[in-house]
Image 1 (tube, rainbow, N blue to C red):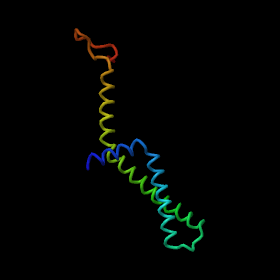
Image 2 (cartoon, rainbow, N blue to C red; image 1 turned 135 degrees about the vertical axis):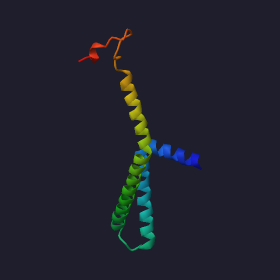
Image 3 (cartoon, one colour; image 1 turned 30 degrees about the vertical axis):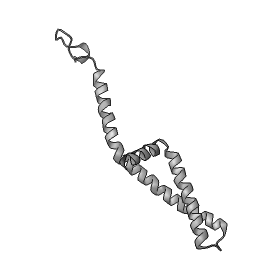
Image 4 (cartoon, one colour; image 1 turned 90 degrees about the vertical axis):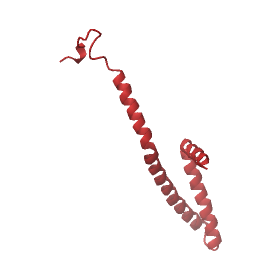
Length: 109
């Protein structure tokens, strides 16, 4: 089960906009179907307005959850990138002393 959830998670991470669009479209369809079943006498335009409103609320909730997940799961990746960046920066600095132990001109005041 864990492999399936990680594969779904990686797919959603790669296709963020498609996932959000699919959630929105599904929410609109489900809301219209529910509204049709519950109040068949309601006007179609009113059904669509309510469906869009419900879909927007659900989409905002999904975006909020995605932001929290990104913050939670992305923190370790961000920390690792920062460590790599620091190491990469330090490796590019010239040595403070040469082979004989004399101080490098760039490091002397």
